[in-house]
Structures are given as C-alpha cells and as structure tokens.
Length: 312
View (cartoon, rainbow, N blue to C red):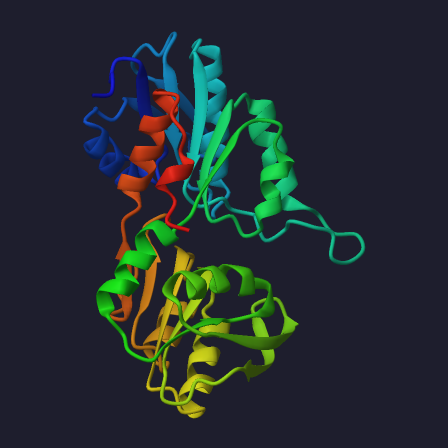
C-alpha cells in the first residue's frame, strides 16, 4: 500500500476534474491550493497547507489559453519556495508541442521554450502523454516519463470486435504511431498523403492502401479543427470502406471541429480526457487516463519502473 503521507497532489484550474479522479485512484485527498485572480487578468498561487519535505505532483494540461501554462509555472515556483522535496509536473496534454523544430526560416520553437520555462521554474520531473513529437523529451535535462494513450485506447478497440479491421494514419507523419497499433492488432495499415494550403487547412488528400469493405480506424495524437480527420473519413467512405472511426489522444477540438465531426462520415471519434470537452457532440467519446497517471505517480513515489505498464 502506498504511503499517502509522503506525497501530495495539487491541480491547476483547468485540469481539476482529472486530478480528482487521479486522487480517488490513489486514495489520497486533492491538495488545497488557492488561485487568486486580479481584475487585470493577473493571478497568484498559494498553497493552503504545508508541503515542506513532500514529493509534490502538480496536475495541469497546458492547452490554450496560455493561462494554463502560466498557472503551472506559478505552481512550480510556489512549491519550490515552500521547500517541497521534489516537484513533479503531471502534464496530460503538453501544449505548444507542434512547434518542435525549425521547419522554415525565422520561426519559433515553442516546445523548447516551454521546456526551458518549466526547467527554470524549478520542476524536477515531467510526466506527460503522447507528445506530438517524441524528440521533445530531449528538450529537457530532467527525467521525462512519456506515457501512451494506447493503454486505454487499444482495450477499447479490442472490445468493439470489428471484423475486416484496418488501421489508418491521417498523414505520413503519424505513420509510426498508427503502425504500432496495426502491428499489435495484427491488421493492415493504410496511409493518407495530404498537402496543406496553410495551417489547419488541407488542400489535397490521397489514400495509400485498400479500404474497400473494411472497417477503418484512424489513429492520431490530437484533433484540432478536425479538418484532416473528417476529410480522411469522407474519402475512405467514398473508396468503399464499411465504416470509419477515429481515435486520438488529445481532444483539442477547437473552432468548427464539433460540427465537422457531427456532419462527417465518422461513426465515432474516441479521445482520452487529457483535455476537458465542453461542447456536446454525440459522436465524441472520452476514455479516462486517470488510472494510468495514478499508477505512474504510485510507481514514481515507490521508485518502481513504469515501462511494464505500457501495452505497446
């Protein structure tokens, strides 16, 4: 049984729903923290109980707006100044991760900047899930525990017992992730080759592989405006697919995404609850990763390996 007196779990504003589930799984209370907001939009963080000498776990996804990232940075800073033994940032969705390289002249690398901000604030460890690019782990000089949503998505896919199953990637960049699912399930892999007119706008898309009379599941790490995933689904139905579903780790779902999903050929789209989903779309289903993060926290506290909890 884990010693709940040796560590404490706190949450930022946006991810409290997930932190409460994590604490329920761990059998510990959620720590008391106050976020004071000022009329100009500035805010301050204060812990309402002693954290001196404790291993502190701060749960906060850094999806927009930037307030969520700033909250996390202030929580880290306050914990450092309150003499916490270790500060562990639990970031189910690591925002700004699409800016992971210099792909054209004179651009920022936002993921590296966020990594530097977290390190300077004083974090000792990062626990996150399905980074947009694996190399972001190398932006840190501290331990990064990188979890995979496959731990909850694969059991769900197996429960559907779909015949003539095909796994698809919505773009060439996501082929490695989709291929991992295909190999585990022992089914074929299909790729979509797309070109973009500009950010969030798909110009053209072609299917590489056979989807005729198949039940297709598209695998991705996040869905933002849902332009790519819904276009892929529509093209696959036109190519003779029996059904098309999508599974993605992070439910960004901004702008017209919910309407696009509802009006598309998708049977359903499955996410984890790394990001809260406020809009109601009947085709959207969320699976909780609270147990997975709770188990990782438990292993970190007890100095146990986390690698054997991975399905793939």
